[in-house]
Length: 338
Image (cartoon, rainbow, N blue to C red):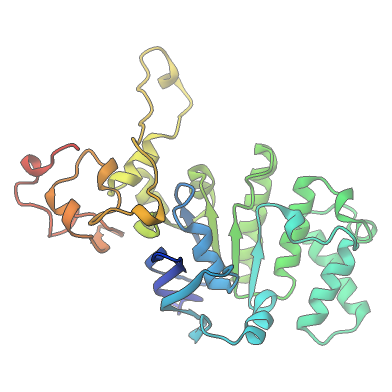
């Protein structure tokens, strides 16, 4: 196996407050191989976007990394000086945000913005950079790229703007692309086009992708592996087919059970969708033991007292006492619904 492009080990992100320090990302670890798409999924507040922001060095104060390490091509990047971190962004790590207008300056033509980015990271003439920008827009599916390169962002539709942002993120041939909810604001048909484009462009370049989303449909269609996050930790991680078809963590099972399906099952006798009771805990109220235990019908005493680490179960890993050797021998009687 080839060495991972991105290696994250025991990453911890904290927010100091007057009363206490709140841990928003707590011991997250994963690798992404060249050309691989790792989907990161979970409810709002699970820590998905914070993990991405910590990797790329865009945490907003007072948030900061307080533990662990992040390596890109075996080079540690979480402790880089601000100027080196700025040079790394765009060149070695590309970013695609949910709203394309977050990345595009409305006062400048899209071509000027792509050309400027190319010339910032590569010593090429303006003419060559412009030709490179046109080629990137064509690859991203912009029809008539040579004419449209001089258009302003507001002259593109939402889907076209996201294609421009994808071209902008890939223009310096980065090793890693972090896509944070890149399809949320788009129509379903446009979502599918952007997903296919993202997969194709990154596979052709061998770019590793961290795809952050709350949509399991997008994950199932796009990702090779998936990490399910809950309360700042990874609840389950593994190949997408295994996690979707055979989830092991009760939280993952709840997410899978909440996805509606089309077909005869939608008749009068259809099964009701699974509802996960309660809500994601606040940072200042994360329970002891497994953070999911107040919402879990299978929780037993150990879940309330000890926090489980990720344990292997088939090709996946799950942080749950029910799947590891630490499960109670008489687990069937020990599991008491809360």
